[in-house]
Image (cartoon, rainbow, N blue to C red; front, side, top):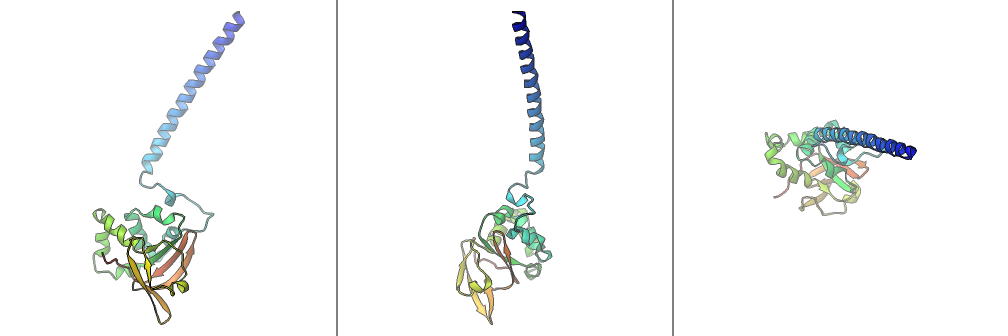
Length: 190
């Protein structure tokens, strides 16, 4: 009988110790998780996952380009990073820094203000089409439907493709679509 009581007492003490240790571990995990959540509250989603093994997405191509720093700043200000890393396919018409510089003075600075986030997002969505067409294939089109729900004209002038008045000057395949570098910002009608 004493052996049973002794065994039962040891079992109870073991359960209590394990429970205390488990509660302490959970408490520490909660603190660590809370700290991590607070520090990355603004940078959540697929766009912020490091992945050196896959083919770059349209977003990562833009981020890596020294000619697209204004576009990347605009995408970040509009908080559209996660949209540009989804499975796609996405065809992005990416204006160069020079294309943004050609806008009237103060336009970019005004659009980057937090109060203009929705307008900026709309303009950026006007540069995205949910498909993956090469420059040559685009020659077959008269217009394209954009993510902004507006159509933009496609023209071929002297063998060059223009989309919404912007000339495609380069094309880069991406893991989730294609990036067509353009020489102008394609402004929506609305």
